[in-house]
Length: 137
Image (tube, rainbow, N blue to C red):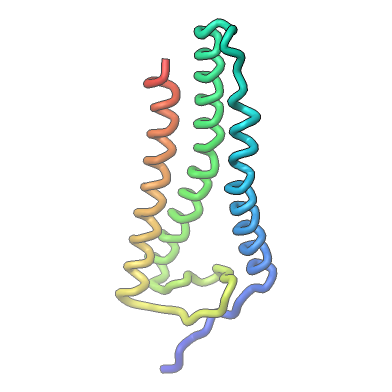
């Protein structure tokens, strides 16, 4: 039986590489952002500075949980579709590079791995929000 090749989607490849570049840019810009956010006058009231930091931590944790939940939904649905159809990548999924469609044990492992990754993302988002809203006071 010949291998079934899933063709690459060039537009998805460009989006994938653009997301990688944007992530690298955020890592590089992190030092500039931290310098802008961390300027406090020591003569100010420490309680007011602490309250501002708590508000910022809660804001960052809440905003940071959104992409985690989006990734969890994507990987969870992808894993579920893989387990239902028994092939990796599942039918209808676009891929940035051409690859062979796998079946059997490999597909089950990829489906379970995607669902486990989705559960990990949900857990990370829950811990982030819980620690920001209930631990930091």
